[in-house]
Amino acid sequence: QFGTTSVVESKGDYNGWYYVKKGELQTGQTTVEQNNSGWWYIDKNGKVDFSFTGIAANRNGEWYIEKGKVNFKKNLIQYIDPHTGLKYEIIKGKAIKLSTGNSNTLSLLNMPQNENIACNIFKEIGRGVN
Image (cartoon, rainbow, N blue to C red):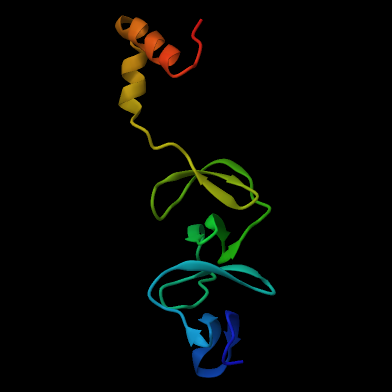
């Protein structure tokens, strides 16, 4: 029991689910960890936050969390995380950050007077332009 690494349930004064690693409560940062019931969002106090919906990360990447739990069935073409404002595509619960590139660059390339420049850039990077 003292060497446990898992999300464990506590009853009594500390009622809730907590992330314990090698028998010690893990606090100070958010993460996503598992137990037999699934993968869970762990808040900075080391406790599962069943009210959290958004994107959270662990050593395996970023995940779509719904009511505290990774939703491995969720697929979204575009999801804006309410906590960060960042855009993601969600594929089976895995969150893939969408490009945050400078949209002004694309706007400049699309201007008619810059058409030749845009064509040359695309040719240089190996994308044919008709």
